[in-house]
Image (cartoon, rainbow, N blue to C red; front, side, top):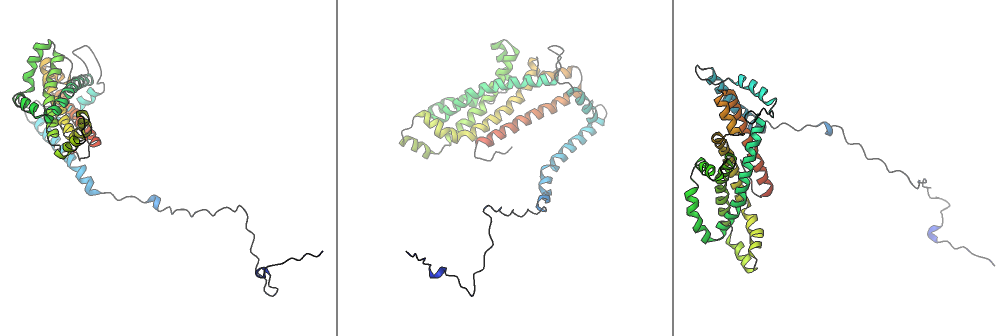
Length: 308
């Protein structure tokens, strides 16, 4: 039995012009490596924006330099009694080398005094926020409460915070709770007013949609009012904490104890003017840090640009 093998015409090799044989390719040939990036890009530097440098760094430096210059000129005048910037700097270096020493209740470092003042501000400000923000929501939400409380707020808000200090001493029978009471009463008004104004400025369309959806009062407050009122509320918080830090210094001067205000008054009794100037700059720096922190907080939780 003979078997025949049939080939396709296309597969028949041409004896005259045989096809060129392709080189064998390895089964696992490595892929070529990518070309190395030019090293010139790694060493390129961004050009310095001198205009932004001028606007951010130079004007504040010039302002501080002008302050130090005027300070030095006043210190050199006769009978001024103000120490020069160099003398104050030396006293500051010595003072801040050990800011947390304690030699008794009336002789403590400036660090303990600042912390004591911040503690009083935090307690009074925290209680004011717990009371003032809900009251502001209620006043802005209900017109009856707005008509009832607006005359009281207009009457009590212009009163100097230190005028409330004797009332606190009479009621609480102590200097520390009286100072906290003074912080509370001066911090509550900005939060009430700004929160109420924010609630009143919520577009009426939002409230109409809530009425159509038959939302509860809790959902109206949490889903509609709170996101819209948050920028106003944080503005009131910023104003309140600035006022509280201003008032605590004066309150501690009158009540005594441990605190930056009492420390200033005690240094005045010791005729140590250099320490008083150091305390002034310390109070300003702490207030600046509080303001900066609240600006960052407002920027993180609101969609609006917050300017200092």
